[in-house]
Image 1 (cartoon, rainbow, N blue to C red):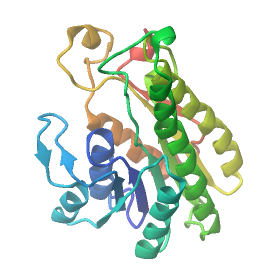
Image 2 (image 1 turned 90 degrees about the vertical axis):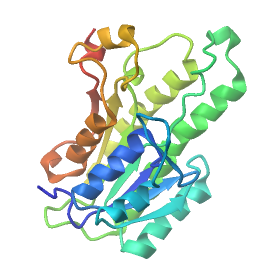
Image 3 (image 1 turned 60 degrees about the vertical axis):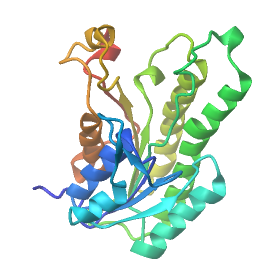
Image 4 (image 1 turned 90 degrees about the horizontal axis):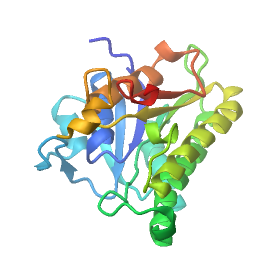
Length: 258
């Protein structure tokens, strides 16, 4: 095992299921100490949809180091507390993964003239404001820290989406929030560069669900798995990406090239 993240302290939001859980487990396998966070620690198996061992406990069972901190990423005080608790427990924050997000339109997609203002506001609060707060308070902590031997102080990874690169009908709030994540990443990458803090984003395609139409739109072996996104996150959090910042990386099996 390469242990590319050995001795690094990682904070990941939205770890109770899906991409956040996969990223947390992958980081722990690569040697990181992981602070898991979500509204609650109860975890769901992505493929079965059944309850599963809480992600932080899963990491501990597998010989890693992890804690759980409750966090609503739309609340400034919660995000500040998340960073504070991590520093109290582990001494610093090396990696921040702003993963927590929602897609509230899924059950009832609507064109913009019917789109509920409350859905739009909540989507922006979690998907964009939450990423802003994560970048804000993680970077503030990283700037105060001694750099690593290679000179870097931190790695921030924001989860966007392929619909942050293109569009999609009847999902105006979600699409707007993910475009916003990519715009925020560009600005933060410039600002953080002088402090040797990397700021990048991942733009995932659709993950495995039984839908032939979606599979056909991903030219390279159909739909992806959470682990595909997790491997990209490991790369962006490691010294393998030492000259990478400001990137919005599509991990989508070719979807965005259609």
